[in-house]
Image 1 (cartoon, rainbow, N blue to C red):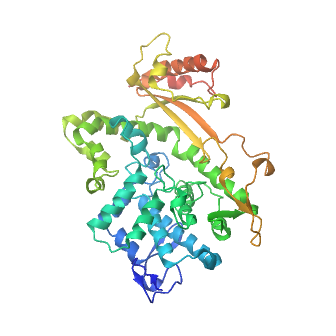
Image 2: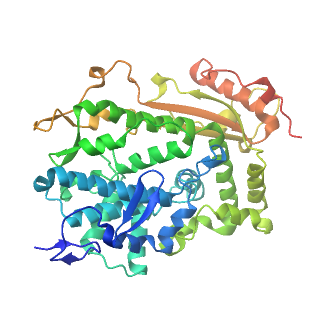
Image 3: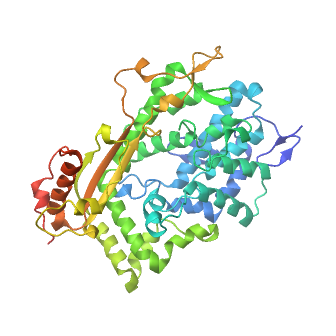
Length: 471
């Protein structure tokens, strides 16, 4: 029987050799992984306007306005995930190929899934689907994973890409593997292949391997998580990927580094302030530009990217004035003012409901009369990727390569210094007008007293910030 060649077509003579044959591959130099070799089928997807759009989507949204180096795009991240996905499958094939029956078809499928996993992402990272769409399409459920699947079909049909139908079906299943649309395990062959790009079982996947290292580097942060160690020592047991017991701290470091990025970079108070302003600008521009309608049709969706902000700020139309003024405020660094924040007490986490601007306004007692449109609230959830549960609960380990038994590791058997809680919930309040910082800060403190009986914030809002008056 033949094997599938790099174009996804059955060939009786194609060798099941290296994961990349440099003789028939293009290559690019990546600042994280070095030389990345692109096989012919992948190049057909890359050389489309739909995939090239990812160059105009910053991986970290507006984070570069706080961390100037964070300007890398979803394009280079997607190439990185493509490369690591291929390397992961090839390593499993090298070490366990005869037992796992990994063939060229499997290798190509996982690589394409890695390449296209983010092709449905909206502008400004996750802001588009989590903050903007819920305000303009109330009750309408949409996810970038689902749109990625639709974009894959659109690219194949639009550009007449010759790819095996079963391969493209599995690519789409792999893209959805960590989402609510994931196929049940019993309906798949070689389940372990679906844990490489987007792992819905325990969150360890090459998507995280790439963005954690790439984001740390771009933002000038140190990163002592070494994904290479996990790539070299992972092993498939009972159709799932397991890790050596001696690497448990490396696994934990993956999730701890991710959580640290969320706290210090992705949800930095000023990053969130800018995000709030961008969302307000998009909402105000939506009626005129009909931005949200793009999600209904992949042939229109690919035209939507981060440059929508430039479109708004340079348009002369009176209908866009409010949105344009908000973007001008961002340019001039006249941002929504961060008033204060508190961490939700551990014993209140389970029944926590998102705090709203109405909650804050209703807590004012005297002085300036606040309106809901004066206040912005961010409910920031930071976890180790499994909500309130330890990620180690869903990860199986093995003792050594001769052992046939897999097992989980209890955290109290590892270290008493590891966290006993796996999720933080921060409530942050912003004033859209600098002169209202004092009144909103006072209302926020009243809300904390009313809700918890104490002020949960670490310190008071600085008096200097409270006294600031818009000149």
